[in-house]
Length: 334
Image (cartoon, rainbow, N blue to C red; front, top):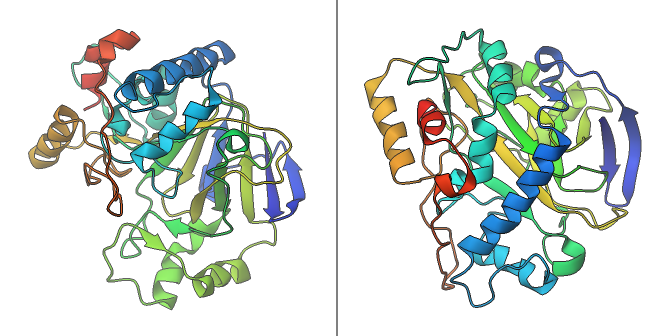
């Protein structure tokens, strides 16, 4: 596990075995949440899932035929990075991670939640966020980093209190130059000051993309090595405060070897006693809709992606039971 700084030409500095604290750094990395065997099984599950959902496509996915890997882009992932439409938030891999005891334990520890394993409803609820899948760009000739920054904040600048921790679990090793999470370490502590400086204290938007001027504002106030990329082994749980400025980056052309990316997003919070929110979350689950990260807000992504006039074929539906998942465990998190 390490953090590193980089530019378009390669790595600048590396900080091996960085000890990160969620409170002070706004990011933490927990290794070995999923075992190596679990990750290998999830990789096989990924290939099976892609094969099944693309079976109605002209050229379905076949792990043994790299020329078929481009079928991923038939689903119009956002920035060729994030599958946030159709029913991708309800893929079997994401539900495996959401139901994982070690993942739930980390979120329960953050919020001081005591879980009742005998209850029909978990003390935690989960988002139905999407998934990031990028086949090796060296084989598809697509999906490379394009030099465009999308550093952003996922928490409204109208509220700078601690509210939410987001997470992701990669099922492939994340090496230097691979698609990964980029963060401005420590930026969550400047959330209120930034809101005042740019007069955003009354702006309710939950998602704010930063301008070059705003990015520079953070850099002027943070350490020189605060703009970092994550390198970690498969099965790690990467957590970040929702006030932390961050971005998902695509693979860099200078990386040393081809690699798959499959990163499963997971965000959990304590269940709140709000019938309206509960009904929205249950409806989103029933209709297999994708939501943003906050499970107690239940904001939906569009069912269909923006295709810019191109035709699309929706993915074929799947059954959780066919992937060995427990419907009872899944529903306990809804």
